[in-house]
Length: 257
Ligand SMILES: O=C[C@H](O)COP(=O)(O)O
View 1 (tube, rainbow, N blue to C red):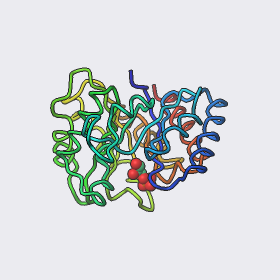
View 2: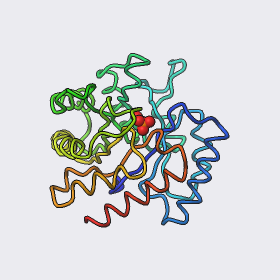
View 3: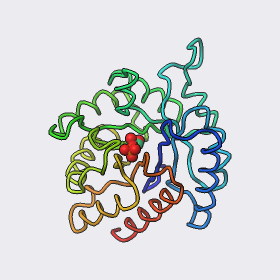
View 4: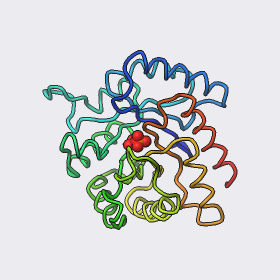
């Protein structure tokens, strides 16, 4: 079953071996002092899975990766299969990030194959969706992204959808809270029409303060508009900032439910 709130960090290509080990150890000791790691995860490059899982061992936090092959085990040189990732104890796999579109040329059709491969081996895909430009209307973009990614999934599939408008990734600041609230409400409805078990996160230049601002802006409104947590990139590379965000999300959610 998916945790009710989620706070994750994708270290992208920022952290090397020693830095990942140190990040995991500092996060693990912080989580031990903050009620454990339920609903906490990090997504690292494949070669760093073992060092991350060793560092987070015993905390309850989960290990994720930034990509998964659409292919099964077999003659697919250089590919990392969902089956192997499951064997390594990975829980979450990112799919659909705009950096994979921009730098590697991945397509919506490929995202669908990756999602199905992940779900087929008990992994939880974190599908990254969002409109490419600030001026774009989110709903049709999100609808098309979800249609491409979630076709042919079994009824009991568990998925995480990270709303990351491309214009807010790697930016000076996150998307405005009112935009996030408006879009997460629409997104949640679209996701619920396609899969039964899901969580919806916000990502894009998020860090300490981002979730609290969204939750504050959404207080008194429809709770479905508030995401179930945040997915950090740069904002989570400092373990203290990451831990502060974990505490902030837990406190904000505790305050509204
Ligand atoms: O997956 C994480 C996001 O792309 C966020 O990255 P960023 O916080 O560095 O903008």
